[in-house]
Length: 389
Image (cartoon, rainbow, N blue to C red):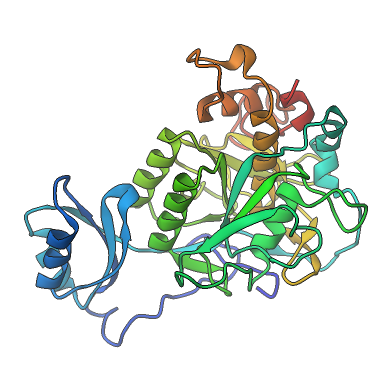
Protein backbone atom coordinates (compact mmCIF):
# COMPACT_ATOMS: atom_id res chain seq x y z
CA UNK A 1 0.00 0.00 0.00
CA UNK A 2 5.95 -5.87 -4.28
CA UNK A 3 8.60 -7.92 -3.98
CA UNK A 4 9.05 -5.24 -1.38
CA UNK A 5 7.04 -3.04 -3.68
CA UNK A 6 3.72 -1.50 -3.98
CA UNK A 7 1.73 0.29 -6.65
CA UNK A 8 -0.66 3.13 -6.19
CA UNK A 9 -4.02 3.79 -7.77
CA UNK A 10 -3.46 6.19 -10.63
CA UNK A 11 -0.50 7.44 -8.73
CA UNK A 12 2.55 6.06 -9.83
CA UNK A 13 4.80 4.01 -7.94
CA UNK A 14 5.04 1.75 -10.83
CA UNK A 15 2.34 -0.74 -11.32
CA UNK A 16 -1.40 -0.32 -11.28
CA UNK A 17 -3.41 -3.32 -10.21
CA UNK A 18 -6.81 -3.89 -11.76
CA UNK A 19 -9.76 -5.20 -9.74
CA UNK A 20 -11.04 -8.61 -10.74
CA UNK A 21 -14.77 -8.43 -11.35
CA UNK A 22 -17.26 -11.08 -12.40
CA UNK A 23 -17.38 -11.65 -16.16
CA UNK A 24 -19.17 -8.79 -17.87
CA UNK A 25 -19.26 -6.57 -14.79
CA UNK A 26 -16.65 -4.09 -16.02
CA UNK A 27 -18.30 -3.63 -19.40
CA UNK A 28 -21.67 -3.15 -17.75
CA UNK A 29 -20.21 -0.75 -15.15
CA UNK A 30 -21.33 -2.95 -12.31
CA UNK A 31 -19.07 -4.39 -9.62
CA UNK A 32 -18.39 -3.21 -6.07
CA UNK A 33 -20.20 -0.12 -4.83
CA UNK A 34 -20.83 1.68 -1.54
CA UNK A 35 -24.51 2.46 -1.01
CA UNK A 36 -25.10 5.30 1.45
CA UNK A 37 -28.57 5.38 2.99
CA UNK A 38 -30.59 8.21 4.46
CA UNK A 39 -30.94 8.28 8.23
CA UNK A 40 -33.90 6.36 9.62
CA UNK A 41 -33.88 3.12 7.63
CA UNK A 42 -33.37 -0.10 9.53
CA UNK A 43 -31.03 -2.85 8.41
CA UNK A 44 -33.77 -5.02 6.93
CA UNK A 45 -35.12 -2.15 4.85
CA UNK A 46 -31.67 -1.36 3.50
CA UNK A 47 -31.09 -5.01 2.59
CA UNK A 48 -34.44 -5.09 0.80
CA UNK A 49 -33.47 -2.05 -1.31
CA UNK A 50 -30.22 -3.74 -2.34
CA UNK A 51 -31.97 -6.99 -3.18
CA UNK A 52 -34.67 -5.21 -5.19
CA UNK A 53 -31.99 -3.70 -7.42
CA UNK A 54 -30.38 -7.08 -8.00
CA UNK A 55 -27.41 -6.42 -5.73
CA UNK A 56 -25.73 -8.50 -3.04
CA UNK A 57 -24.55 -7.10 0.28
CA UNK A 58 -20.87 -7.59 1.05
CA UNK A 59 -20.62 -5.84 4.42
CA UNK A 60 -22.13 -3.18 6.65
CA UNK A 61 -20.33 0.16 6.99
CA UNK A 62 -22.17 1.48 10.02
CA UNK A 63 -19.67 4.30 10.65
CA UNK A 64 -21.03 6.14 7.61
CA UNK A 65 -24.53 4.63 7.39
CA UNK A 66 -23.70 2.56 4.34
CA UNK A 67 -23.20 -0.93 2.95
CA UNK A 68 -20.67 -2.34 0.51
CA UNK A 69 -22.51 -4.21 -2.24
CA UNK A 70 -21.92 -5.97 -5.52
CA UNK A 71 -24.21 -5.03 -8.40
CA UNK A 72 -24.37 -6.73 -11.80
CA UNK A 73 -24.71 -3.71 -14.10
CA UNK A 74 -24.99 0.04 -14.55
CA UNK A 75 -28.74 -0.42 -14.79
CA UNK A 76 -28.73 -1.91 -11.29
CA UNK A 77 -26.71 1.07 -10.03
CA UNK A 78 -29.26 3.47 -11.51
CA UNK A 79 -32.07 1.47 -9.95
CA UNK A 80 -30.36 1.77 -6.57
CA UNK A 81 -29.84 5.49 -6.99
CA UNK A 82 -33.53 5.93 -7.72
CA UNK A 83 -34.72 4.09 -4.62
CA UNK A 84 -36.30 6.17 -1.84
CA UNK A 85 -33.97 6.07 1.13
CA UNK A 86 -30.74 5.94 -0.90
CA UNK A 87 -28.59 9.02 -0.44
CA UNK A 88 -26.00 8.11 -3.07
CA UNK A 89 -23.96 5.27 -4.59
CA UNK A 90 -20.16 5.59 -4.48
CA UNK A 91 -17.55 3.54 -6.28
CA UNK A 92 -15.78 1.03 -4.03
CA UNK A 93 -12.39 1.89 -5.48
CA UNK A 94 -9.13 0.10 -4.80
CA UNK A 95 -6.66 1.64 -2.39
CA UNK A 96 -2.94 0.91 -2.50
CA UNK A 97 0.00 0.92 -0.13
CA UNK A 98 2.50 3.66 -0.91
CA UNK A 99 6.08 2.38 -0.91
CA UNK A 100 8.99 2.09 -3.29
CA UNK A 101 11.66 -0.65 -3.44
CA UNK A 102 15.25 -0.20 -2.33
CA UNK A 103 17.89 -2.91 -2.43
CA UNK A 104 20.47 -1.22 -0.23
CA UNK A 105 19.34 -2.66 3.09
CA UNK A 106 21.86 -2.49 5.92
CA UNK A 107 21.24 -3.40 9.51
CA UNK A 108 21.37 -0.66 12.10
CA UNK A 109 20.13 -0.36 15.64
CA UNK A 110 18.90 3.22 15.26
CA UNK A 111 17.41 3.86 11.79
CA UNK A 112 18.44 7.23 10.36
CA UNK A 113 14.87 8.48 10.28
CA UNK A 114 14.33 7.87 14.00
CA UNK A 115 17.57 9.73 14.67
CA UNK A 116 16.66 12.58 12.31
CA UNK A 117 13.41 13.38 14.10
CA UNK A 118 15.17 13.12 17.50
CA UNK A 119 12.83 10.45 18.84
CA UNK A 120 15.64 8.79 20.82
CA UNK A 121 16.07 12.00 22.84
CA UNK A 122 12.54 11.61 24.21
CA UNK A 123 12.90 8.14 25.76
CA UNK A 124 15.20 9.01 28.69
CA UNK A 125 12.34 11.10 30.10
CA UNK A 126 10.30 7.90 30.42
CA UNK A 127 8.00 8.69 27.51
CA UNK A 128 8.09 5.68 25.18
CA UNK A 129 4.47 6.12 23.99
CA UNK A 130 3.16 3.50 26.41
CA UNK A 131 0.16 2.91 26.51
CA UNK A 132 -0.99 4.93 23.49
CA UNK A 133 -2.99 2.83 21.01
CA UNK A 134 -1.88 3.17 17.39
CA UNK A 135 -3.73 1.34 14.63
CA UNK A 136 -1.80 0.45 11.48
CA UNK A 137 -4.32 0.42 8.62
CA UNK A 138 -2.33 -1.61 6.12
CA UNK A 139 -1.41 -5.17 5.09
CA UNK A 140 -1.33 -6.42 8.69
CA UNK A 141 1.60 -6.81 11.09
CA UNK A 142 3.92 -9.81 11.41
CA UNK A 143 2.61 -11.38 14.60
CA UNK A 144 5.76 -13.35 15.40
CA UNK A 145 8.38 -10.72 14.66
CA UNK A 146 10.73 -10.49 17.67
CA UNK A 147 11.03 -6.72 17.26
CA UNK A 148 7.25 -6.21 17.24
CA UNK A 149 5.28 -8.94 18.99
CA UNK A 150 5.59 -7.62 22.55
CA UNK A 151 3.97 -4.36 21.43
CA UNK A 152 1.21 -5.92 19.30
CA UNK A 153 -2.02 -5.93 21.31
CA UNK A 154 -4.52 -7.17 18.74
CA UNK A 155 -5.99 -6.59 15.34
CA UNK A 156 -8.62 -7.30 12.72
CA UNK A 157 -8.84 -8.51 9.13
CA UNK A 158 -11.54 -6.61 7.22
CA UNK A 159 -10.81 -8.42 3.95
CA UNK A 160 -11.67 -11.83 5.38
CA UNK A 161 -13.57 -11.34 8.65
CA UNK A 162 -12.50 -13.72 11.38
CA UNK A 163 -9.25 -14.60 9.62
CA UNK A 164 -5.72 -13.71 10.67
CA UNK A 165 -4.44 -10.15 10.55
CA UNK A 166 -0.90 -11.44 10.07
CA UNK A 167 1.07 -9.57 7.41
CA UNK A 168 1.43 -11.50 4.14
CA UNK A 169 3.03 -8.60 2.26
CA UNK A 170 5.57 -6.86 4.50
CA UNK A 171 4.47 -3.26 4.02
CA UNK A 172 2.38 -3.08 7.20
CA UNK A 173 5.14 -4.63 9.31
CA UNK A 174 7.62 -2.11 7.94
CA UNK A 175 5.29 0.76 8.86
CA UNK A 176 4.64 -0.74 12.30
CA UNK A 177 8.36 -1.01 12.99
CA UNK A 178 8.90 2.68 12.36
CA UNK A 179 6.04 3.52 14.73
CA UNK A 180 6.92 1.09 17.49
CA UNK A 181 9.68 -1.50 17.08
CA UNK A 182 11.07 -2.55 20.46
CA UNK A 183 14.11 -0.97 22.03
CA UNK A 184 15.73 -4.35 22.69
CA UNK A 185 19.31 -3.89 21.40
CA UNK A 186 18.66 -5.97 18.26
CA UNK A 187 17.26 -5.08 14.86
CA UNK A 188 15.69 -1.63 14.82
CA UNK A 189 13.81 0.65 17.19
CA UNK A 190 10.69 2.71 16.51
CA UNK A 191 9.64 6.25 17.37
CA UNK A 192 7.60 5.00 20.34
CA UNK A 193 9.26 1.73 21.40
CA UNK A 194 6.56 0.80 23.95
CA UNK A 195 3.49 1.94 22.00
CA UNK A 196 0.47 -0.39 21.75
CA UNK A 197 0.30 -1.55 18.14
CA UNK A 198 -2.88 -2.83 16.49
CA UNK A 199 -2.92 -4.52 13.10
CA UNK A 200 -5.85 -3.38 10.95
CA UNK A 201 -5.49 -5.52 7.83
CA UNK A 202 -7.31 -3.87 4.92
CA UNK A 203 -4.83 -4.61 2.11
CA UNK A 204 -4.05 -8.01 0.63
CA UNK A 205 -0.77 -9.78 -0.15
CA UNK A 206 -0.39 -7.64 -3.25
CA UNK A 207 -0.69 -4.41 -1.28
CA UNK A 208 -4.17 -3.44 -2.49
CA UNK A 209 -7.65 -3.46 -1.07
CA UNK A 210 -11.11 -2.07 -1.59
CA UNK A 211 -12.17 1.22 -0.06
CA UNK A 212 -14.99 -0.46 1.84
CA UNK A 213 -12.40 -2.61 3.65
CA UNK A 214 -10.46 0.53 4.57
CA UNK A 215 -13.62 2.21 5.85
CA UNK A 216 -14.41 -0.85 7.96
CA UNK A 217 -10.86 -0.69 9.30
CA UNK A 218 -11.34 2.94 10.31
CA UNK A 219 -14.62 1.99 11.98
CA UNK A 220 -12.87 -0.79 13.91
CA UNK A 221 -10.21 1.67 15.03
CA UNK A 222 -12.82 4.07 16.37
CA UNK A 223 -14.76 1.29 18.12
CA UNK A 224 -11.58 -0.02 19.76
CA UNK A 225 -10.40 3.36 21.03
CA UNK A 226 -7.35 3.91 18.83
CA UNK A 227 -5.71 7.24 19.60
CA UNK A 228 -3.80 7.34 16.29
CA UNK A 229 -4.52 5.70 12.93
CA UNK A 230 -1.71 5.50 10.38
CA UNK A 231 -2.73 5.15 6.74
CA UNK A 232 0.28 4.57 4.51
CA UNK A 233 -2.04 4.02 1.58
CA UNK A 234 -3.93 6.06 -0.93
CA UNK A 235 -6.07 6.52 -3.99
CA UNK A 236 -6.40 9.27 -6.55
CA UNK A 237 -10.19 8.99 -6.31
CA UNK A 238 -12.11 11.42 -4.13
CA UNK A 239 -14.95 9.28 -2.79
CA UNK A 240 -17.40 10.95 -0.43
CA UNK A 241 -17.79 7.79 1.66
CA UNK A 242 -14.05 7.90 2.38
CA UNK A 243 -14.29 11.49 3.59
CA UNK A 244 -17.34 10.64 5.68
CA UNK A 245 -15.41 7.88 7.46
CA UNK A 246 -12.41 10.14 8.02
CA UNK A 247 -14.65 12.88 9.43
CA UNK A 248 -16.38 10.44 11.78
CA UNK A 249 -13.03 9.18 13.13
CA UNK A 250 -11.71 12.71 13.54
CA UNK A 251 -14.85 13.76 15.41
CA UNK A 252 -14.38 10.71 17.66
CA UNK A 253 -10.98 12.10 18.70
CA UNK A 254 -8.65 9.98 16.58
CA UNK A 255 -5.44 11.53 15.22
CA UNK A 256 -5.29 10.57 11.53
CA UNK A 257 -1.98 10.41 9.66
CA UNK A 258 -1.58 9.53 5.97
CA UNK A 259 1.06 9.28 3.28
CA UNK A 260 0.92 12.14 0.77
CA UNK A 261 1.60 9.85 -2.21
CA UNK A 262 4.45 8.83 -4.48
CA UNK A 263 3.48 10.37 -7.82
CA UNK A 264 5.71 13.43 -7.54
CA UNK A 265 2.49 15.33 -8.24
CA UNK A 266 -0.65 16.12 -6.30
CA UNK A 267 -1.49 14.68 -2.90
CA UNK A 268 -3.61 11.51 -2.69
CA UNK A 269 -6.71 10.71 -0.68
CA UNK A 270 -7.14 10.43 2.27
CA UNK A 271 -4.14 12.71 2.88
CA UNK A 272 -5.91 15.52 0.99
CA UNK A 273 -8.66 15.75 3.58
CA UNK A 274 -8.24 18.53 6.11
CA UNK A 275 -8.88 16.17 9.02
CA UNK A 276 -5.77 14.16 8.12
CA UNK A 277 -2.11 15.01 8.73
CA UNK A 278 -0.60 14.65 5.24
CA UNK A 279 3.07 13.67 5.23
CA UNK A 280 5.60 14.16 2.43
CA UNK A 281 8.93 12.29 2.28
CA UNK A 282 12.45 13.63 2.78
CA UNK A 283 15.87 12.08 2.22
CA UNK A 284 19.03 12.13 4.34
CA UNK A 285 19.91 15.57 2.94
CA UNK A 286 16.62 17.03 4.22
CA UNK A 287 15.41 17.62 0.67
CA UNK A 288 12.13 16.41 -0.75
CA UNK A 289 12.24 12.93 -2.26
CA UNK A 290 11.76 13.13 -6.03
CA UNK A 291 8.80 10.75 -5.87
CA UNK A 292 7.00 12.54 -3.02
CA UNK A 293 3.66 14.13 -3.75
CA UNK A 294 3.43 17.80 -2.89
CA UNK A 295 0.86 20.58 -2.68
CA UNK A 296 -0.99 22.87 -0.29
CA UNK A 297 -2.47 19.87 1.53
CA UNK A 298 0.93 18.72 2.87
CA UNK A 299 1.14 19.35 6.62
CA UNK A 300 4.48 17.85 7.65
CA UNK A 301 7.51 16.10 6.20
CA UNK A 302 9.37 13.06 7.56
CA UNK A 303 12.13 10.65 6.48
CA UNK A 304 10.95 8.44 3.64
CA UNK A 305 14.01 7.38 1.63
CA UNK A 306 15.96 4.18 2.37
CA UNK A 307 14.16 3.56 5.65
CA UNK A 308 15.24 0.35 7.38
CA UNK A 309 12.56 -1.40 9.44
CA UNK A 310 10.90 -4.68 10.31
CA UNK A 311 9.32 -6.75 7.56
CA UNK A 312 7.13 -9.83 7.16
CA UNK A 313 8.07 -12.99 9.00
CA UNK A 314 11.02 -12.15 11.18
CA UNK A 315 12.91 -10.15 8.56
CA UNK A 316 13.98 -6.58 7.94
CA UNK A 317 13.97 -4.51 4.77
CA UNK A 318 14.75 -1.07 3.39
CA UNK A 319 11.85 0.72 1.67
CA UNK A 320 11.27 4.20 0.32
CA UNK A 321 8.01 6.09 -0.01
CA UNK A 322 5.68 8.44 1.74
CA UNK A 323 4.42 5.22 3.34
CA UNK A 324 7.67 5.25 5.30
CA UNK A 325 7.39 8.95 6.18
CA UNK A 326 3.87 8.83 7.66
CA UNK A 327 4.66 6.44 10.55
CA UNK A 328 7.40 8.78 11.80
CA UNK A 329 4.64 11.35 12.32
CA UNK A 330 2.20 8.79 13.75
CA UNK A 331 4.83 7.76 16.29
CA UNK A 332 5.56 11.38 17.16
CA UNK A 333 1.82 11.95 17.67
CA UNK A 334 1.75 9.03 20.11
CA UNK A 335 4.59 10.61 22.10
CA UNK A 336 2.74 13.94 22.17
CA UNK A 337 -0.42 12.23 23.42
CA UNK A 338 1.62 11.05 26.41
CA UNK A 339 2.33 14.64 27.51
CA UNK A 340 0.28 17.42 29.07
CA UNK A 341 -1.71 19.46 26.57
CA UNK A 342 -0.66 22.76 28.14
CA UNK A 343 -1.03 25.89 26.04
CA UNK A 344 -2.27 23.86 23.06
CA UNK A 345 -5.54 23.10 24.88
CA UNK A 346 -7.65 25.20 22.51
CA UNK A 347 -10.99 23.95 23.84
CA UNK A 348 -9.98 23.97 27.52
CA UNK A 349 -10.95 20.37 28.23
CA UNK A 350 -7.54 19.34 29.56
CA UNK A 351 -7.08 16.62 26.95
CA UNK A 352 -5.56 16.38 23.51
CA UNK A 353 -7.81 16.35 20.48
CA UNK A 354 -6.62 15.77 16.88
CA UNK A 355 -6.41 19.46 15.97
CA UNK A 356 -4.33 20.19 19.08
CA UNK A 357 -1.90 17.35 18.37
CA UNK A 358 -1.48 18.55 14.81
CA UNK A 359 -0.94 22.13 15.96
CA UNK A 360 1.79 20.99 18.37
CA UNK A 361 3.57 18.89 15.74
CA UNK A 362 3.46 21.72 13.20
CA UNK A 363 4.56 24.44 15.62
CA UNK A 364 7.60 22.42 16.72
CA UNK A 365 8.66 21.09 13.30
CA UNK A 366 12.07 21.93 11.85
CA UNK A 367 11.48 24.42 9.05
CA UNK A 368 12.71 23.27 5.64
CA UNK A 369 12.52 24.97 2.26
CA UNK A 370 10.79 28.35 2.17
CA UNK A 371 10.36 30.08 5.51
CA UNK A 372 7.14 28.99 7.14
CA UNK A 373 4.62 26.84 5.32
CA UNK A 374 5.34 25.58 1.80
CA UNK A 375 3.89 22.98 -0.56
CA UNK A 376 6.87 20.62 -0.30
CA UNK A 377 7.39 20.21 3.44
CA UNK A 378 4.24 21.73 4.90
CA UNK A 379 5.27 23.25 8.22
CA UNK A 380 8.55 21.34 8.18
CA UNK A 381 10.28 18.15 9.29
CA UNK A 382 8.56 16.59 12.28
CA UNK A 383 10.69 16.78 15.45
CA UNK A 384 9.55 14.39 18.17
CA UNK A 385 11.81 15.83 20.87
CA UNK A 386 10.67 19.41 20.33
CA UNK A 387 7.06 18.28 20.16
CA UNK A 388 7.05 16.79 23.66
CA UNK A 389 8.64 19.79 25.37
